[in-house]
Length: 113
Image (cartoon, rainbow, N blue to C red; front, side):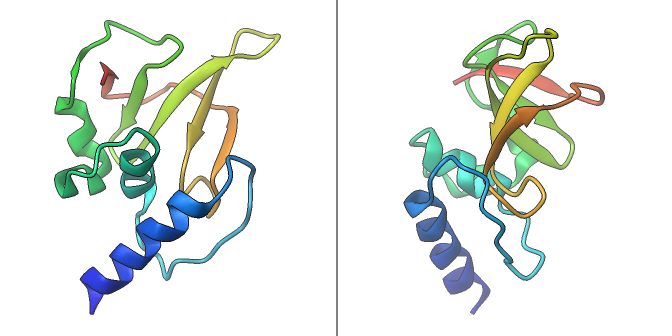
């Protein structure tokens, strides 16, 4: 049952736009699922955000196109705002897919995938 729910969730993520759109997914941590779909990496091990820390190779720090990994979240850096903060695109950010400035405090990996 849970696998079917997660598979359905992945399809919803693929069909969604990059705009913030509130959604509820019964508390499932779907940022890793979304990132896999967004980057064309369907490997189920990447459904766990932390596992992105071993994907690709070390980027050595933040930059556009770099996957940024926190212990319980994953996203991709898409730019910087006028104040120099990094803009991160991710799923399950407040229950939505969105792009926004995020603190990089607590990051455990920067990866090129």
